[in-house]
Amino acid sequence: MNKTDRIFVAGHRGLVGSALLRMLKLRGFDNVILRDRKDLDLTRQEQVEAFFVATRPQYVFLAAARVGGIAANDSRPADFIFENLAIQTNVIDSAYRNGVERLLFLGSSCVYPRECPQPMREEYLLTGPLETTNEAYAIAKIAGIEMCAAYNAQYGTDFIAVMPTNLYGINDNFDLNDSHVLPALIRKVHEAKTTNSPHVVIWGSGTPQREFLHVDDLADACLFLMGRGDAAHLTNIGSGEEVSIRDLAKLVCTVVGYNGGLVFDTSKPDGTPRKLLDCSRLRVLGWRHSTELRAGIETTYEWYCDRFDAA
Image (cartoon, rainbow, N blue to C red; front, side, top):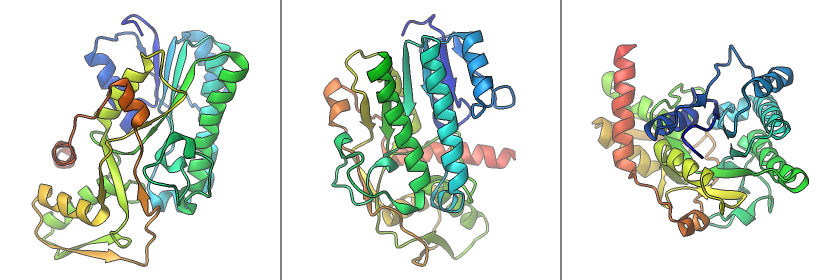
């Protein structure tokens, strides 16, 4: 990409999209195209087609999606599968029809089978049953990955897909009804501290292993891959480091300064037992994350407190 290229960031107000926007501006890309949902509903085909015809982006980061944690995925599967399929279909097809040079599609590590061998390699996709609590979302993301591959095969496009691990950072969603595990923990522990609660209740047994990546590292990796002609069609992006939910909760308590107890509600689902990505493809190209977990949680918690206090 050149600094003057027209770049469309779809979903620029979300966790990933806002990080991509910050990174692009930091590196001097000034011709970034943005639209709020009130001006462009990506689930509406006619709006997306008209937008691409009018703006003619050369590069597209497809970060727009409906996302959420176990509770949201499990209770609203229709919303997750419809909205994500609609967004992906409209943007990918319009990118092809309007000559986009390269598109990067944001997938998710939840596309891999529930009992996937660890660490998870890209070739393990579609080799076993999915985790049932987020199956609708995973199927939609798999469809996006396969759509990129199909358009490349039939039309000669250059559309790539990345599979990020669990993300966190500035502009994360801290709504306890919709959030992922790390922002939910930050909010729960912060509120327990401010209200002097004796303990924090956490879903599940605390035993599942998870890998986390700061969203700024993801944005850096996406720009890195977008500029590489030798990037694979499908690439995992992660830290290569994992932690149990129990140890993650203890780390959040340390960062927040909360000295109460942790109660694990085993009546709630754990989700996938272990999720660790094999990032060999990305490492071979020369990329590695730079934000360690504790430091990332500290900056995220600082941002959350500023936002919380302002509110």
